[in-house]
Image (cartoon, rainbow, N blue to C red):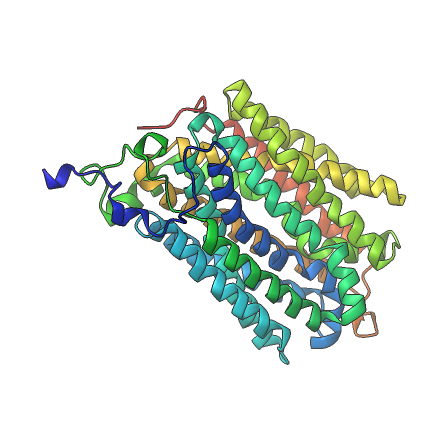
Length: 441
């Protein structure tokens, strides 16, 4: 009967490059990593403020609180659009959604480079965040179709690793580029990088394998696909989605606050490093995550467990952050190694995504990941705002060259945010139900 017809019709497959050879074992990596370039690009947008924070404060004449507001607009766009993004990805072509979202991000990047007012810059950065709402969910949707469950954590870890490379590029390389051409020209160059990635995705990304034997979401049929509201209800009622989303948000916070915005200024004003040294140290957060994401993913897949690596990562990250909070003096290499370990151990967050995928029916993978991602990115935006408010709390309003000067005590108060959130993350991981790397039917 027509109602029994599976969702692997030709019209479901969308555009397919003629040279895409699905019998080749490398094809799934080519497809998913081409899409991951979007994630890579969004991580540049998300983290470039760490390299240009002083330039933005000078240009728009704003304090730390206002800078946090400007940066947080990116994450608030995620909060607004992530849940709808997950719903759309369950129903529309992933490839088309990626291209449309990337186009929005590219246009807003060019406009941000021309912004003359704080509010227009905030609007442009908000629009970039809309694009980000779709990038990781799209990659996860593709990975869940092209990779078997036993490889999903490793694939997720490698996709996140690829994104972290974008975060690392947004540090010292972007700082050096800004020094040579100015922040506006650097952002314009960034826009052209996005245009190049758009072409790459157009050429290499396909929604799903054409052969049902190679599609790991092919058990989905028209009959067992839930209705729109029923799918949302299933995602909301699943406690795993909330626990994993909040866990990932808590582990993600040091990266989103220090790596994306405040790390460079903290290292310059508290430990007296130069701007280039500070961004180099900040980039070690991303290098640590580049190494840690596939390592935690492979560990989890090999053990056949999700909870234990998540608990271990939370404890190890807490120890690393406590050292940062209470270290009175750090040499360049000590700071670089410490930031590396913070990035490495907080990368246990990547296990939250396959845990969500395995804890929900395939039919609502996008919706469930969208719900969790609202918590993840909402936490990042809120974390940046709270950190900015905390360093402004006892600030004596000292300014030099239109840049606020903060004391050791100002940053010390704000850094206490991280041990609290990491303790919460451990408690959340304790209550997550083990999936044993198997997909719910």
